[in-house]
Image 1 (tube, helix red, strand yellow):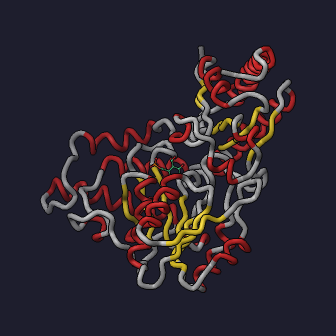
Image 2 (cartoon, rainbow, N blue to C red):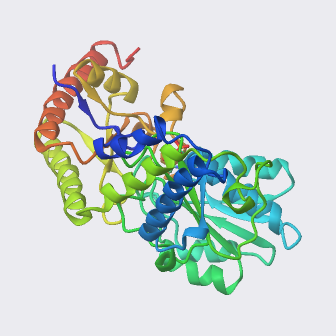
Length: 389
Ligand SMILES: Cc1ncc(COP(=O)(O)O)c(C=O)c1O
């Protein structure tokens, strides 16, 4: 049986070039980049070069990047780092109801610490508007954290429309670009953000590495204390192999990006069309115009997501019901709930997320299997009086 992986929003396979770039730093080049001897100087050079290359992709200065252990740490560093450094100015933070838990749960913790957090509502497509944000801005607002593209439904937020407004009011602007980096042109200057989070394993790089862009002169209180690495913003010996891997993964992602995006959009479109032609009742969740190209979230009406996923897995197809962490626990997706799409769509939602290696043949096989599983489950459902077990 051929196995088809369409869960790239959860994680991606590592690219061969990334592994090749990392191997020397896992074997011979083991020096600590803070050491002044030859061993240290060699890895320092690799660290500097990775930082320069990654900064270039983001339109940032190398000194504005802080390497972290992943997207979660980058998000936490942004929220706690800004809130703690700016609390004398105000204690109000704004985010959205559809953020990844790395932001949402950090915000809940900020509330425990005495900050006030506003969770902006979204429309049925998962989008926040500039007007809604403007209405909630206050004199004591110190930070707005709004994701670039949603990991469950792919909806893009109108970041570029917001940057200027926040800058005028001297409010720090953070975006979680973990799903967008490597797939969208992400330029910190065009976006007008002060902080931006990325992660290695979503872009065919290694797991456990990420980066936070912090605009020059932005006050940020560290979340770790120890050595003076990363210009005193993140203590701890740098994970050189992973940092080199992250920079290489970015380089590979941004090669021929336009063609890759076209390919991802085509796969997404082909799946929608295939399902339309199949005997399946479905609704697409998300925003058809403002979307990441690699994510398609679909509710198969009348068939529960866990039953569909289990049967897809048996057929060799790896998809997901939402973010990886909520997938294991049968909790309904907070993103779909915020979008107010109704219970039947929430409980039947499946996320297909494509990678550069997926093919049209993969999509055709998915359509074939979904149709068969859908019909089978729907009939089992009606035979059992509606209980799917
Ligand atoms: C939007 C978003 N933010 C943050 C994260 C967390 O990133 P990491 O797994 O690198 O900690 C993820 C991962 O699923 C994500 O999709």
